[in-house]
Length: 84
Image (tube, rainbow, N blue to C red; front, top):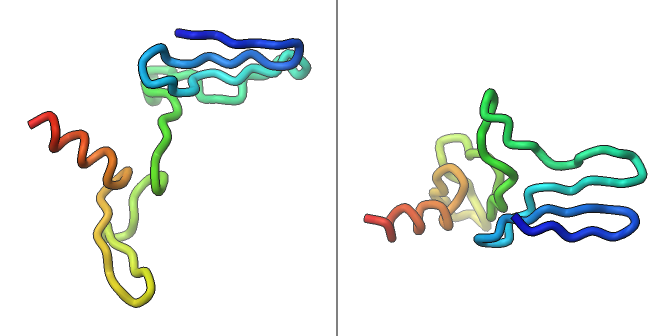
């Protein structure tokens, strides 16, 4: 974990991939990112490109053409394929 801070905020980043995992306001004393509580969901706040969540029937229409996009988009799928 890497921590950067100034007089106003403190941010925490994963050492691998630099994923933002904490954003704490020193003024409000609030953490503004999910804390990865394993009781609910043990992950942090990954960058979910190009969408968050899933699409109805895993597809969308853009400029009259239908496209399929499984949950969390193509980056996740490409990563899983590369591990096979």
